[in-house]
Image (cartoon, rainbow, N blue to C red):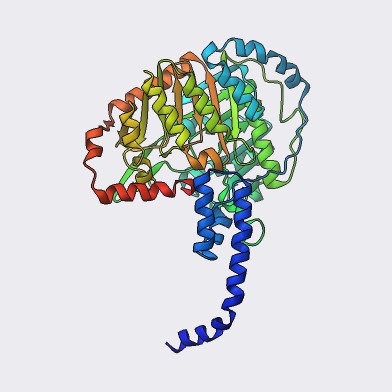
Length: 480
């Protein structure tokens, strides 16, 4: 008690100063939030928080409220063969079904990456298949291996790829590994030192700095990307780590969807890696050795979509909305974390009401209980509009896939939530290919067959406590 009295005696004379400081800071932060012209309800919530919860809300905003993040962009010289190929964009666009051409135009306008043809695409539905294909490609590398992953675990899978990189580096192959500082926080010197000793370059994306740009902590590089010799690329939902989720005494294997690319689109993936590496490591990678001429390998039209908070537009959400609006027959969405923005939810509802079959495939339970509650808060209004929601209980669904009318597929690292739309750096791929999209629809239907269809009657029986819990978690969806 004496300690409390001493603290009171020290702080009491300072309260006028603290009150004035809080008022000034709350006014300053309110000016910043209002100037950003965000959603009116979000802006009002922040402003009220600044004045009602002194200092605490200011601290929270410093880490989680800021929405802009600028990469230190270095202009990458464009090889002559890429400039020549740009004239083919109109030809490739003409090969896309008319209803989907606006999707391509919008995606190019938002990301500056056009559709490119001549690609061979291999889709992997199982984590082990992706690991084996990536390991084989690394073993066959001649000039460089570039890897960028949100999570790299120091487990047996992580060690497998670490040792592969060490082996290739010792044989003269340039190897670079970029990890997110938060997602790969378990990385330590014991794992990294052998890489560095062998000549593998490593870097962390946006490491936490308390007093230097603390708002950067909330912006994470969620991409999963590998490029081999500038001609073979991998991307999708899968990180580098042993793929199971422990729940009690049971191990649930993760269900992933990844793509192997050969052809001109691999060069586009290289551009994404180079930009991220330049930002994190401070070194520029240019020249024909990193951007070699990629001959045609197949017939798939592909469009690389790097999105993130460094682009002012809500690019990924806008592209998704345009794809859903273009649908005439069916839309399927597979995602582990479903916390849509209001425009996304309305787009799905509108499509269902105009007769498009809209199917969502979600895990019955994720590794984040708060996300589960926030996700389920949307179920009733979506199902009432005709959207079909399937919950998969087998394993843990980690795939991120969207298909439209069996002609368009969107595959990548982005979840269907606010964080992926606005906060994270994500990497997706639009595939304008009937065979690829049809394959992904078959995979969807196969998993949906083993899932449980959520019915509106079940939602009507929710207790008031459950409804309150879901609504409360939904309030926190912008930072989940």
